[in-house]
Image 1 (cartoon, rainbow, N blue to C red):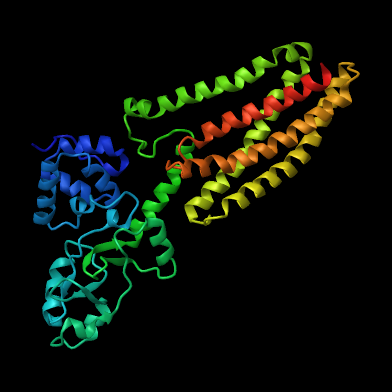
Image 2: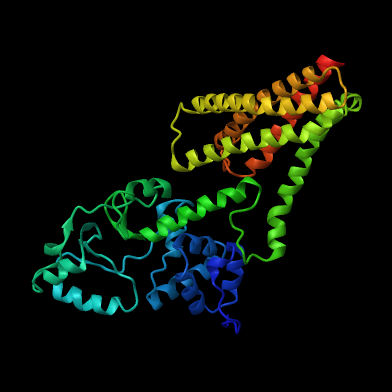
Length: 400
């Protein structure tokens, strides 16, 4: 492969598929350099789309260029784990290495790498301690690295979920964390910046996932791929919208008889949709932060049902008053009954919408799916069907 004559793209601005295509057009040296500028987890998403032979070449190139990329070694770890964020621990030295020798090697390493800590390991690579530059500066140069290292340092496991890792490091605020296996062997390091950056990316992707936008899509994603990402979900949304239309069609006779009901259909649908979206947003936030332990789901549903009932009762008074005045202006003798129907439909629909807003992501999670994936599409369908069905059903039962 020859290097492209086009300017090297910033791979972080592309979705993984487009970034992999860009890497294919580059020489191994240019590709390794470009990948090294990415968040390690995102670089792994690009590399895993390449052929095994290409992956091996990039791994060899990263070693020859002495970059920190650990992409191929990180591939076995599951997406969302600390292992996907690891970089090579280039500042690891034997415990019996003289400090003078360590400092001399560090002078070469710092010209190519961002080094924060010096790691002290034994002959089997087990992490024994961590030293800062200050420790090495004030230690006698003839002493060994082990004498200047702080023993039993905090470390992360590679299989640890990134969110759980964030909880562990919140009170530490170290710029870098060693990653060790269950035997204490130093596997690599994770920079705090990359850990929080990746979690921020996952959180920012939630809003798009709720309406069917893939988290892989970026601003620079080609329109053809963006269309491929989005269009299937819009078709699904259209199919679910037919359900709401079917509910209205079922009560077409009622709407023909009392045309005023059609004026208030979007009022109820909009209010119930917002109620459900509030519950959905809070539920997804709680899932992201790990607030929901086992056995708390029923309490979450009860809380959202209560909030929906209270909010629906209050907003139903305003909607009912609006219905009363409009019906009275048209000279209808059943204005009070229409107002009561509007109030009951609002409080019932908002209560059920709150339950749906919390229940949709909980059900998706239980089914093993991403709780945020297209949750807004399913929620919108549920709230539309419920609000229109209750409103028109009550009107048919009491007035016709």
